[in-house]
Image (cartoon, rainbow, N blue to C red):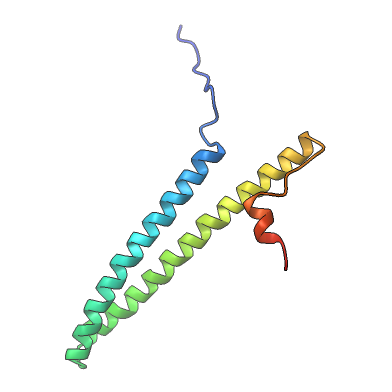
Amino acid sequence: MPSEYVLKTSPIDGNRIKKIAKQLVDDAKEDRDLTLEAYRFFKELAEENPADNVAKTQMGALLKILQSTHSKTVDAINALLKYEDLQLKKERTTSATGTDDSIYDILRKED
């Protein structure tokens, strides 16, 4: 009878989550650059022929995509900050001293 495989480390640890968040941000930047390039192309078409409604429609659709890529970047960073906050709460419950040098605490501080 085969034995059950037990993971030695968690498949979702802090470094992996940070790596995934970084990859999402990089992918969103690449998508944004490609979308801006396409937007400029359709903008030139619309300027050459003001009656071209297809180009104008595509420009509107591309602006929605640009906003979506920005939102996904913000969501990825927000998820990373929430994970960092959970880690801090977990550390504070297991030990008496907590660190205030995390990304989340730096961003939370009000000047």
